[in-house]
Image (cartoon, rainbow, N blue to C red; front, side):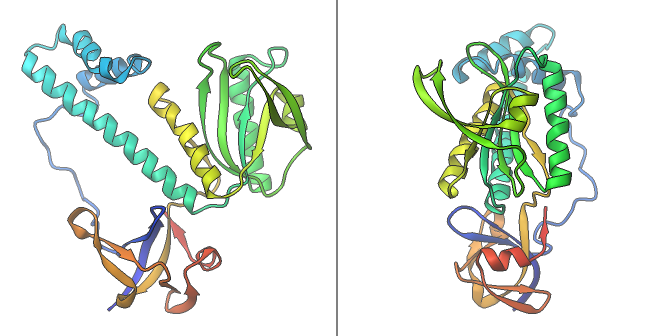
Length: 292
């Protein structure tokens, strides 16, 4: 058989294909007896969960139950409601991480960057706004791409921005600087960018060397999603899948929920609208259409 326009991603070990029509779009969600996503209870849970993020995981649930007990009514319903929403939050966290890793594996990355600010130049508000605008300009003008997260340092709670970047055209100059890390109490090497140093303050443009560095950087930024509830910031064209026609001989087996996905051989043939591009590799993937 011949399959057209399959959506393909890498899970780190294998290429996985989603055939056209495997997940039909829903025309509408069925009405159930559950509380809507905009219900006061749901909004209250989200607020309480955010407040409890700084606590150890084992304490979050009991804290939320205690906070929501007043005014909720039936205790059994409260337990069921909190359990459902704790599961929802965990599922959403997993989905965000999966989506992030699929995007990261499909792109080329050059630097892991950290930005902070000098009190003489910015307040926290102006730092967040002006750094966001500056990075936006480099995305459009210089072809930068990045995935990042805002976070606060554990001790001083000072706002930082960490990101995994693709920088095809650098601005400013990179200077290797030796200084003292007050957190680890050791000397460290940072790679200061002169453009950002002048306009914002301390920064580090650490080069990325291979997939292992990308994976470590991804672990670093995703840990803040759990600790602070911050959202990932995406910029530039960052598709999740590449598309290729497939032949039956390149499919190893069915996979996933209800076996609607397909595991492909590591050397499967990439085909774009009937044109054979060759065995899968970075060069052939670059020629294929991308999608989300």
